[in-house]
Length: 320
Image (tube, rainbow, N blue to C red; front, side, top):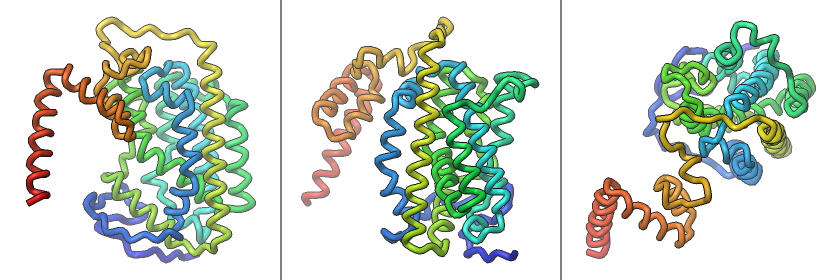
């Protein structure tokens, strides 16, 4: 079956080992009925719930135990093995072919490398499909066999997340677990075939938006994406419960103060980065705490003074 693809900007080509797109190309014209927009809006609550579950919050604070990270990597291996197996089976399906980017996106082999790093050469005999991950894997196989268009939802939920927030998790894990700067144990987060994450995501969204789908099918894809977030939360919850049975690992001396250590007790004055995050939420209390935090850090005083000067200049220009 021969597939026709829409013209691609710059040098993006299906199957190439490198995707290089212009990060400054923000002329994308979107409609509220585009699938990417429906997914963004329709999964907002599920996305927020997933981000705010305790396991993810602890991870972002650098409070991740090595054993849990290993188990989480194993869970992802089974999820991506299932998803990429079904995508491969359906790669000529008219709804899957336009978003088929095996070289750029597929994660199974990268996860296998990470598991070998953590468990050794015998890693395949040391991992198993957990009870919390099995429903996710079963659902992916079900839709791949019976309703392949819903693979669009699973692909979007995982890959676009990996290219976005996943990059933050990579840095946190590398620091908290003291993983090598050369990338061992973190291959999952490294997309060697994509030069510009932002540009590729624009390309991927445009491919999704050009799929010929009626309103009912779009709604089903949004619902399936919400289910995918739910399955991910089941995995997070399982890891969180497992974490309660694992002894807290002690960091080596000289590692410094992690974000988690600075945040223990909820004192945001110890961490200007956390204060800044809370300030942008619009809470004036956090904004005041941010200002006080900056004033307590000499390097930040210089930055704050520069901001104030710039703000004064902008205000003068605005009212001229």
